[in-house]
Image (cartoon, rainbow, N blue to C red; front, side, top):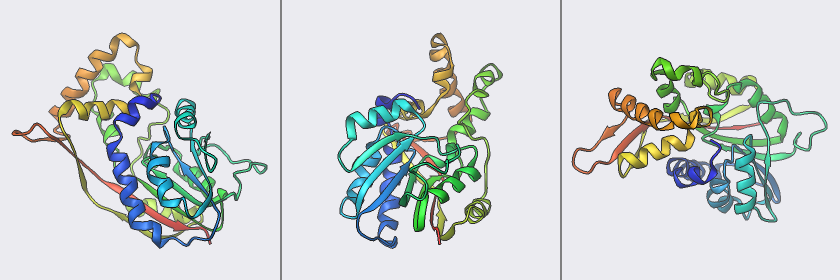
Length: 267
């Protein structure tokens, strides 16, 4: 996910999930005046600025979006930065040092469609706990099952040598109960955790494949001359395993996915 322009054009599902989660939970959170808020996995900044910020603008002093991708952060800074909203590079899996300005620096932490990419979820949750002030809350929305990871598993052998180098790809899968325990062990008190099967409709197969490519880091690892063959292989595998439903009359592509939302507090 190092091409912000492509991601911005093809992240409709991410935008919808963020809006749905915020609509459902924002008024259930306890707010004071002039809060400092963190958005983890902000990507190119459009969800942070266009969806999260409008929900928060009358409640906060500062909103900071962070992402491990420097390319994404630079794009976000240039296209979305403002006096009360900034973007910085940060890898949530790495230790938060005692002298860091992030330590107990935030009243709220949000994260949308990022946590399913995080391999070391336990340490990441511990970091979030350290970054929150006492009484602070988190709202984390992510995929219980990552369709892209499922696709990687069924690629032919010739492509597997490239998959192993995608360090940020989490091949771990956890049940809702296992995830609940992770949050609790990190020190959070869970207020609510819920998941349900949802669908997202793409107008055609081409737009669906564009959305896949926008989050597929294989393109960063593959030599340029293999991109075309890989794209064809991905399309063939998705069709072979019937990973999506295609409407015979309209050509629309329907993706079924399983999002999970966790609302928790640091007592």
